[in-house]
Length: 402
Image (tube, rainbow, N blue to C red; front, side):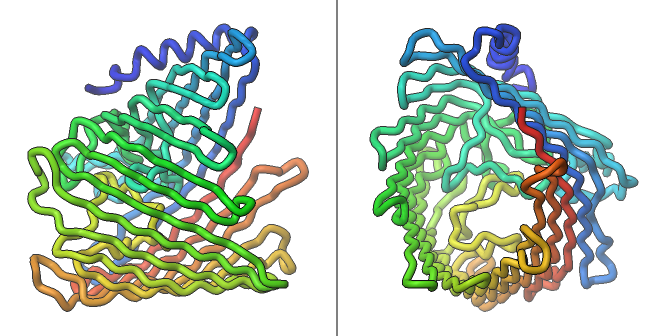
């Protein structure tokens, strides 16, 4: 299916907007995003890639109350981006790219919507889904947002336990317009079915997540995540644990999958500074599987551009976060370094890679410019294959809520 696959839920969502005078609540978020990205390779034979673009993301959520406990719900979203720079005729994974004609799109858009029903703390919706699971995630690190299509049930079973049950059959990656089947290594799947349980305890200081999923004819994936934070006087401790187990299933279009993920990250905070130390291991003879379209695995204990998800790879993670509000209110600085060792390619081990990032975030939280934010990311990546590069990204965002 192409874009018309969303016609029914989108039209129904628009009809709900037309009748918004009867809605109990309507929320509209509009974000303007200006992104300049440039990646320069150390190899002079490789030209730099990147672009400068302006985007807008508008999303509406609303509900129409039928009884005290029951309501009809709707969402609608429009995303649009315009390239401001010249076409380099190279794929930067930000804007759509035609590999045949070697052309980068001058603009692109995404239009979607959903309808649903809410009963007390239980919600069922069909159509567009902005999900955050250990496999399918909503990624805000590029221009437009990866979104999914399917059926989703979310329920708050009690004060501590929340459950999501999803059936996703299509997605629109961040640099594409249309929805298509989910895929990994260009092997398509008809659906992703999953159960995601999240439990909070100890006044939300202990968070546990259990994830069970099947990506039809590709693999089954299971994940366990634990986050625990506590304070000892002025010392802050934040611990993150994550485990994945992936096994082939169905017709096994990806062949044999031998992969486990182990991750541990420990952060220590005191005053305006936070230091983190972590270790991550990919166990097995295959890379950790990720959805095509560069969908990140944000449940990693320390996700970075390099991913460090290769077969047999052991990586060490170091982070330093500084709240620089003493210099400029709401200024935050982050430095991180990852050293990946002994990963395997086609069964041959011994390859290394590393990444060093510097990120500066500044936002305005009050006054007439409330909602304005700036981010600069400087990324230096190196590996034994000679694909070393330095990348800079500059974001200017402005969010308005109605």
